[in-house]
Length: 403
Length: 84
Image 1: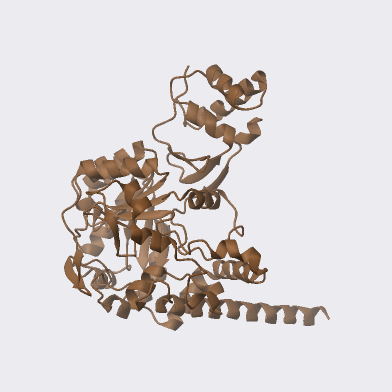
Image 2: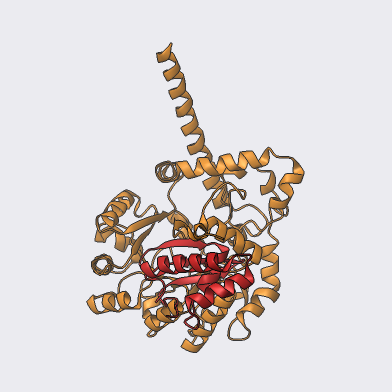
C-alpha cells in the first residue's frame, strides 16, 4: 500500500452513458468508462432520471409527452405527481442500488413546489444532481434558490438566438427572453449551465449561434438531432427532423472524431474470431434497465427516457423489486447483439447507435432496426468515408511533394 | 480529530470502487481500493490512527505504512475540503 493509491483518475462528467454502447469494451479509457463497466457488471442504475412532474408550461412542437390519449388501445398520459415522501424514498432506494447520477427533470421540474428540497435531499444522499429546466420560471429569486440548492449542473433548452426561432419551437411568446435570462442569471451566480439544443428544420439556421452564445456566457452546450414519435404514436415530431444533408453536415462538424473512433473499434471487434466476440454480443445493447432507469412524474418506472413502457410503479412496489422482477425489464435486458433480427449482420453496424425504444415505438419491434438509427448510421458512414477519402488525398499529395 | 466526509461531496461505492465528485469541480474521480476504504471510514467516529489500525486489519500492510498513508490521503482530502 502506498499513497500512490490515492492518485486519482479524473474525467469530466458526462453522465449519460451512450445508449446503445456502440464501441466494444476496452477501447476507451477513464474513470467514467470504469464506472460504466462496473455498473454494468453489478447491474447498478448508475444514471437515474426522476421526472419531478409531467406538467409543463411550454407546449413545444417536438415534445414526445402526451397529457392524455391512447396508443394501440393502451392508455397514455400521466396521473398526479408523486408526493415528496415517495420521491425521497425513491432517491433512497436508488442510492442503495448504486445510483450516482440523478437527473431531475419533467415536464418542467420547477413547477413542482418542493424541487429545491428534492435537490438538497438528493445531494445529501451522495448524488451528482442535474436539474433540467426550460428556464421560463427563473427570475432573480429563483436563480438564488437554484444556486443555494446547489445542483451540480443545470441544463436549459435553448432553440435559437432570436425570439422568432426559439418561439417557433416553444410556441410560447416571451419564452425566449425568459429562457435566455435564466441562463444569464444562473451563470452570473456561478451555477454550471449546459445549454441544450435539439436541432430541427425550424432552427437549423441558428444552431451554431446557440453554441457561440452559450460559450460567451461560460456555459457548455450540447446538440441533439433526435426526434421521437409522441407517446400516442403521433409521428408529427419526426416531420421536424433535419434532412440527410444537414445531418451529415452537423455530424462532420461536431462528431467526426467520435464517429471514426467508434467505427474503428467496431472494425477491430468484427475482425476477431467468433469466440472472442461472443461475450460482447451477449451483453445488452444499451444501458436501458441495466445502468439507467427512469421514474416518471406519477411514479411509473421505465427502462430509460425513451422507452414508454412501464415496468411497474413505485406507488405499488419498491424500486429494487421492480428492477429485479419486472418481466418487461428482463425482456429489455435480453436485447443483445446476438438477439437482434437484422442489425447484427448490417454493414452499417460500425456506424450505428441503434435505439431499441425507437425501434419499438416507430418501427414496431424492439429487436428490429430503427429506421431513424439507420438514417443516422448512413450519415455517419458518409462522414467517415469522406474524411478518409480526404485523408488519402492528403497523403498522396504529400508523397508527391516529397518525391 | 475524527475526519468526516463532506456532505457536499457526491460519492458512491459501485462494484467495489468508490467514485466521488468534489463540490464545484464537476469531475468524476475514482478512488483506489485503499483510498476508498479510508473514505468509507471517514464517518466522524474514528481518528486517523483508528482508521489506519482498521486498514492494518483489512490489508497486508505494516502499521507505520498504514498510518503514514492514511495521514497523507486525509491531508489531500482536507486540502480539497472533502473531509472536515
